[in-house]
Image (cartoon, rainbow, N blue to C red; front, side, top):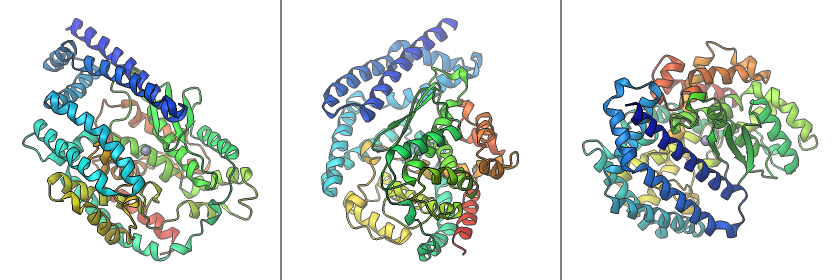
Length: 498
Ligand code: ZN
């Protein structure tokens, strides 16, 4: 047994090293690589990925995982969870015939470039045949893996362990029933909040100083967390001691980079506070997409867009942009960064309308996977739902069904985790308020006790606990979307004097 564990950990260390290298290459390709480097980059990625695949599918590795799984009772908690998580990944891969897997990988590459061109030309027909192939494969793979389960449930499970359509139907049903009337009432009063001063000319050099100041307030230690500049911000990490967040400075917008830094900073805090015992383990990093997103959105919206934090932050922002923000108050700033108006593009949506962009994708995805929605009808259905739910008219497919890359990457079942994350965040914050005076801490810019509370109950566990276990650990209860509904209702009713 000891020999099996030794071999298992040795392969894990090697896999971790390859993944570190792959991650650095990918980060570099988005931040620093000149365009002509693409071919060399692809070759290096291909060669390293092949080594990872060989290791993951080697008899030595599979044998070790099987052996560990058959003697779970003898294992320490971390090794047991490693074997479980990897065993599940193995089972998902093993049930797909190699030929089909290779064809699917090839199709992913084709679909992604077809999507890019389709979006550029706003021509859905270019993408539809690829989407059909990806959908067919995805449905088939889900059936191979769990023939008795609903394929969409199998997919949801991949991103958010334990999440089901039944639970999401309840969740989105609650949002529709309780928040749609609020969205409509706010939309009618869109002019009540003025955010024009957030748009103008904000030199990048000053925005960089603001980003640095925000990272300091959030306790993002620059010796372990770097900030890069990219087209579309993201966070990646190679270990808890090397986390990379990114942002994009828009010279004409003050809030865009500011809140992207806080959002990605929330992701980074999660990684930075994983337990030391998980360094190099596949259990490092967040429990799930939804749990990770709960932490980025908790910092971005629940803390970062709160009235208290606006009072703390605004004087610093104003000092950096005195001419642009002359005559603006902290209260004006608070209202402006929370302005809500139904819109077409998910990634630009405000806190209140955001979950409805996800609701629309969830409804469509569910029908696509069930085979109830022919692909030629997808754009019209997308547009119909945007009109029905958000009251906006979609002018073309580039601003509609083609706007997100997820489906072209074969990620079906991913979208719901964004909305679930926001709702987790609201529930976690309510629980935190029983222990901490969150409003006073936020207004003082003293975020360390908030991060410490989250680290103790959530961050340190990595993937050792499931999202459900973490919620119970932090809140003493199962997931309950009512906290999210109450939070948004309170905030927007006050903000718009409804
Ligand atoms: Zn995020």
